Length: 65
Image (cartoon, rainbow, N blue to C red; front, side, top):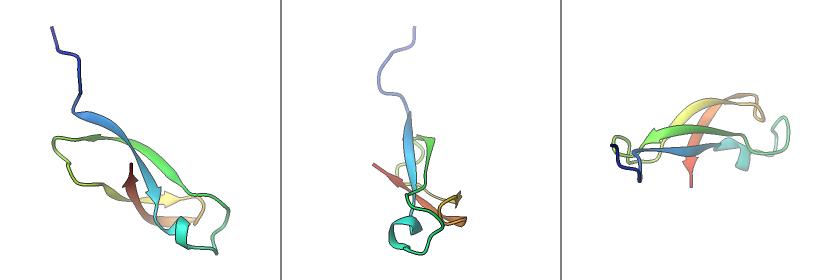
């Protein structure tokens, strides 16, 4: 039988970096994505380029706590 406990995968949140500092965006708010990360293979924080609906362009999304 498999042990139950802390798995290697955990759910993380990616948040747009430009939404916080840009007052000239299309709409109010901060864009967030959720994804899964393997904590054994990727120990550093993730940075992915994703589409932000508030900025209406592709921006860097960083992992938040």
